[in-house]
Length: 239
Image (cartoon, rainbow, N blue to C red; front, side, top):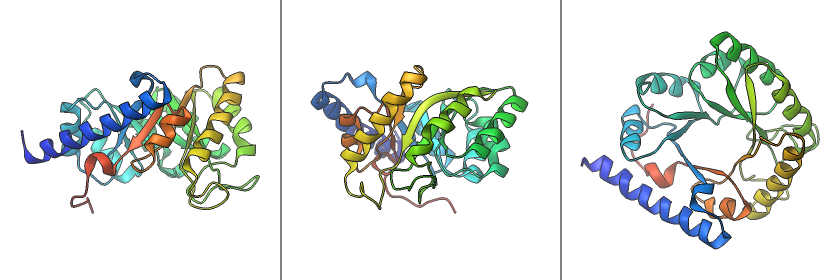
């Protein structure tokens, strides 16, 4: 086993132990939580090693990095998640390789994704990104729609050809009433998820939690956690 593969394997074991312990503490089954490894800034060779180690969900946040990486790994059975703020001029590219776009936060983006998915003959899963630091009618500092905009955006995704409404995503906010209160933030997201599922029963995916706060996300009920540093560690980044 190469040094890099050994490092990744050891990191994955530690992350797996954390997720398993968090599930046990919350009275949840381990299979209830899906690990998404955020491979942004890391090379396709790492994605291949992760696949050899059993990872099947990976995430990227910049199309200029993701598109060539997805192409280089097209022979692997991976589910690609796009998690970054997405400009409409990148939608056609993202729709060609992503299976799930987790950062849907405005109506214009819904229309662009729908058109691109239809042209590509694909169905894209979509998560509405919720910004818990945003005032009514505004977007968050790191993207996301304010809570008062969830329903309208979710309905638009559900009605759009080529798109599938899968659920909600959030990033623990750095400002506002939930700053430094990750568990409270994720609990709030779960409340929004419950409301969403009342109108859209199949939209049951909740993406929350990263390397520093995955335990809070699992405790709150997240179905997917997005882990980067804890798996990939610190090493020279792509330019």
